[in-house]
Length: 329
Image 1 (cartoon, rainbow, N blue to C red):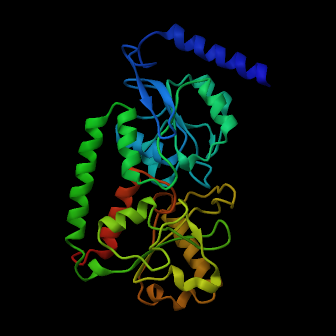
Image 2: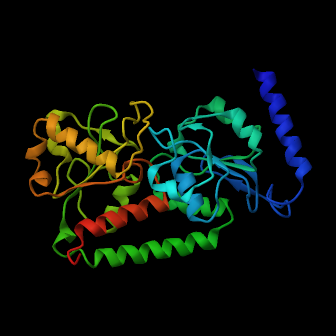
Image 3: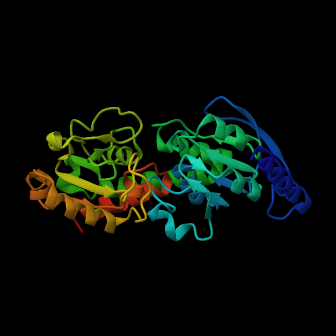
């Protein structure tokens, strides 16, 4: 197996060397030194052209910055790329599921850069094999601010100016949405992911969608308004009040999740609506939640809201909050 992998890698590198310019490598072959978040000092292309993104944020942010990766892993708990990105990543192939990339497939693609981060949960032995193919850049740590990760990705990809411009657009959009919240400006807003591991889970304040709510000045339920472990936190059915609020944005990862296997269903709004119907029928106390009684549970794309997204996912969050809470709509 090891010999076969090495032969495949050598063949892929031979193809890369034989092709010369064009879309493979940078146009002038220029490189620079970059030190990633793990402290690795790397030599990377100034303008990477053949990027493999092995996490949801690195795929999201690359696409937002105008760099289309040649391959990626499927979304968390999903058998395909995250639902909210489906219309933006046509032609991008998958090379395994999150945390389990197919090394041979990646080698055959001859990338010039591989992006990963703390959400990708890669084993050290996998990283070593990837490093034999191309520079592997660890963009951000688990639970790090999505904005920091986004700007780091812009730097790595040589799109610094584009990154700064997009962040300015985000800040302007936040200001616009916030100005129209009216009485909802002080609302207590919960983010819930239902299913997958058999229990609801909530997002704590360090995660991406939570940071968007904070930027909008919205309050969080007490249990969710604290630093978490960098991923969603399960809530026992006996503590169902911990998911309640004036509003609940309610997502699902289909039948998948951190411990729920891989779902064949996309983690889209329809998946959330189905999960909510099941919760209504089968979960004691669900219909007694304040948000339920007020008609304030909003089914959302779970892959954008309740997993590890980037710049484009946070645009979905802003869109959904604007539709639900804008008093002028």
